[in-house]
Image (cartoon, rainbow, N blue to C red):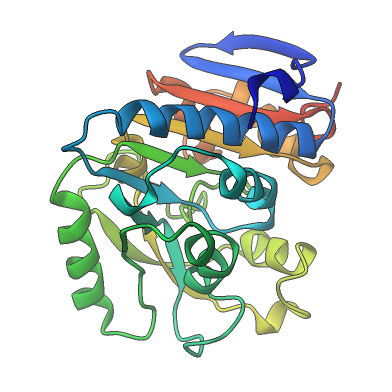
Length: 260
């Protein structure tokens, strides 16, 4: 995107280490986030010997970011290795709700990263956690693009299972009812009983180990969680509060989520 096409945020400020940018609506928010991620990608890829390793979230809150990234110019996606941060267990391989399928449809099939590593929720749980953890451990993660859940989760680290000192890279979790209900609210499933109760997720320390984090949080349904993430004491009661401690995080949000 041409930088001249970007709209200035309504408000910018810092909360501890986090830079917060508030936009009029989610389209402006997504365009700004995509421009920032795209600029960082181009900068990293100036090193012709480098592969950039990225982790992506799969959720409707990220739609505008990914549409913007598809339009970004001058990115050699063949030198990007893409991971994702969580996946349901036991959904059929081509189920549209699978997060790997979402990212393939929305982003990966359109920009063609050189390498895409997907979590598989149909494999033996321990073996899959080990396999994916080994892939993530092989080299540092440069960029993490993430959202915040209505219950304050990051990835599928809901309040009951989030652990800021987790020794694991990837783990299996039981999903909080509030998390599962959000999937219905987002239109991903018709009924609560359709939403899987178990999933695989990157742990909080794995996400926080990314060198640079871009958090994209739009919509009125995220207002309470965003307020908690920005202002509550740092604790697993709202896992997203830990993001404020990361030295390289930018939060992109809109006035509905922020409450302007």
